[in-house]
Image (cartoon, rainbow, N blue to C red; front, side, top):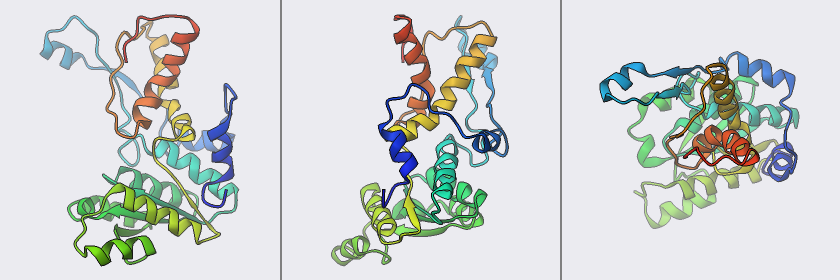
Length: 247
């Protein structure tokens, strides 16, 4: 509870079937996040491939920060604000999560500190500028800011960095500041929970289009995109004892 917001820890361990979304947060998902996203049929791709299959895509790229990451960044920032925290601390690899945290922090008047894997940060100048435009403080990881970073740099001053080091620097920073909390962009249950807004919208829009999916395909790194996309449909499939959907 010292590092992660208590409400997120509560959601992490919850056995409840449904977790209500606070009305204020619902309003922010509608705007500025512009949800629900549109599920669109890719007829031009179907024609190019010459396939009898229907191909549909969820437009998560159409978010203020360009990816699905903002879905959970917004929720975690909201709960942090409610808990009286003033600083969001995190790590980022490719930079999408760092951008989402910077944006979400700015929406709630919070500060953001982002530890960014050094070798990626060095060639993504535009994304770095985007984070700074949102008001975030961005550190190349490993950095001189933390004990962890200094220990790594002492052994190798040219260390390119990796996600494990960036996470360690972020957790250390959050643990030392009572006004800060550490926010995560993938892997954990509460992150997947927030991302199920994707799959729930997919289910609703497929129902309106009188369609049922047979194959659901998504990119996967830490798992929040894939999980948010498929978990609601997977859950309903298991309840209804269907086995005709491939993931």
